[in-house]
View 1 (cartoon, each protein chain N blue to C red):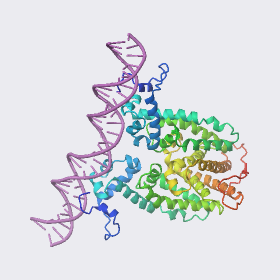
View 2 (cartoon, chains in turn blue, red, purple, green; view 1 turned 90 degrees about the horizontal axis):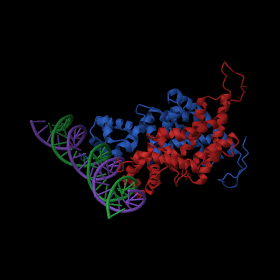
View 3 (cartoon, rainbow over the protein chains, first blue to last red; view 1 turned 135 degrees about the horizontal axis):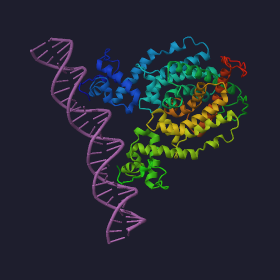
Length: 250
Length: 250
DNA sequence: GCTCGTTTGAAACGGTCGTTTGACTCCAAT
DNA sequence: ATTGGAGTCAAACGACCGTTTCAAACGAGC
């Protein structure tokens, strides 16, 4: 246990019970910022509290005092990054003027690209989430419930618009995976992409080009998927296996 | 330095000079197999030589003796995994009966899915490569040159068939990214997919369904990309190539 | 000025990591 | 029988990790 009988990180247990005392102390916030940057760079396991505290001009004991332990600091960073990302990249702004399915798809692609390949500044929320996908920590369940699941429902809603009423849950999932898989690829495979595709520099203009491409590519894929779904024989009960005549257009 | 004056791992420097003496000793091979499995599970940094040696029924000093150090063992595992994967999943077999662009695309998707979500047995080559994409080690340059770049050229060749002569290098790269991004997503985002899409169990049948979907989705996306490319205004120099007025419906 | 809860600081603790040590076994060649 | 290199083993080394300790510094209320 830390020094004080009621250390600040005990607020994790009793959040809103105490009369509005979120600790806005300097060290607390400096640790949050430094930890966010280094966790995003190295991941939870490879990041060391010594490097975080060095960058925050704080003592190593400060992590234990303010956040309990390294995992508590990580959870606080995720919480902080989520609120910051929600404020800086509000979802409504991206979908405000999107009145057609194509426009909503385009807005979704742009939103995800913005959140994920946006470097610098306290915007490592997308980076931390992308890391959690690949090497999950015990905090993944909370992240999924808080951030990923709502976004995924939004993806599914847009995909459903394209696929129509006869689409199965598997159809929607696979098409949603195709859309966001294209986007996340630029994040996950970045070390390889920069080595193989020398023209890609992850600049603002390049990301805009990727956005246009992914939106157009996905739109065509979704329309083709709907055509195939509508061509399926209407069965009395639900059939998962596609044992039907594949009269492909080619 | 290890015990012997000419330890086995010196073969890294002088490969083919000595008259055909690859050490086929039991410990050497057991270490390779155990290390491949554990490196694929935990990644290079999180894998410990103690766990590897325990699984291989070998002493911790065996790593230093046979491979120099942990990085040398990792490099040997990559080399071994590459040859095993090339033998077990020969590229030619997948493209043998693919005589149309659609068939070649389908074969490519099937090949990559097979190599990447294929669990168990000494087939962790795709798993190790997927890991290197996300958290690269100093071995990434060699992997790119040896395995990824050739596969990427194959992807580009297939994409080029779809896009036609007027496609730019950026067109080909973006479309190639869209195809393999869909596939790799099922590998990279597996922890999230299994939590959100409860129907996905990564079974053989499920992977087959993903293969069919990604091939169809990509085929439609590529055809749409070609239509958009062909509808682009031709440059001032040359306009002979029959700019067919494809209905560029956006 | 004193008190007491809050926050910081240098140092150390216990643990795990990759790697090394040096004695040991085995076995083919002398 | 002896030699000497190849390979194995338990044990230890040094480095780094997260975390803890405890004294010192701080700052508002009396």
